[in-house]
Image (tube, rainbow, N blue to C red; front, side, top):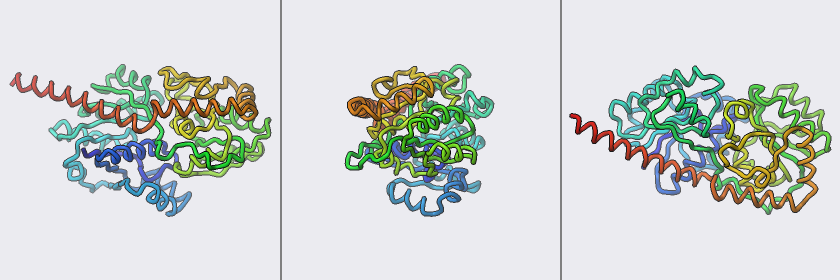
Length: 375
């Protein structure tokens, strides 16, 4: 089968977490003998920032790491119809330009033979509702939502005929334990500052505990304002900016523990949806301590796969426990890795996608037969 993915960017993961998951899904599809192609707009915000931050070497690293992944950049003159000829499945990410989203839906409604799916991996359905409600999704066969609460939001609002939960997951080709790497530092956090959606939480659950415990701590990520960088420095935390996602497993291996700090919109309005870093960290076998979030879908075993801290004081205690109790640390490594390998890899998500496509194919066949009978 031929899969085409419309994405903000495949080649850039600068403040663009969906690239992590998409790379893993495309790699898994290719390993099964399918064709997978990404289409991304020329001059995307993420890519432009990556080039400004890191230069062309970042793109060279991407192609060295993912030599089989292919992406085509499009502009206003791009012939989408020609590229989509022969496609079996087209998946359109929600950051795609609304006019193009509508155009692709019209193609499908006019008889294009591919199955057309809309993929939402963000919180705009609740934080910027008009952005999503104004999208023209009538021609789409289905919606892929990266959490059950988001799926329910689409169903309640009537934004799609068929809406499926399709969580993100870890690319186990990259995210795996690296026992050959010695852990020489204490705490690491990989996360972007963002739009002040978790600024207070970063201070409470990362900066203050690391400072109070005197931990050898590293932070990697982008969009940190000067006052945030100053706060990290004052706490003795090494802020080292952007890191290519493919280099994160080795970074995790060099540290003894990591933390999860969810963005506020997910905690308050879309419970049950962790960041992809939870999947990736547990896949690497690093102990994780999480700020509060409600695992309403039972994705993990909180307290077993990772520890939960309800506030900054508890975070400090949990970090101290993990760093000083080798048995606890090893058990968290084992349990978290066990859950990922059993349920949350890109291999599992491609299995789920294939099942969704089979369901949609069956529905399409039934509708076609009903239409023929009516005529």
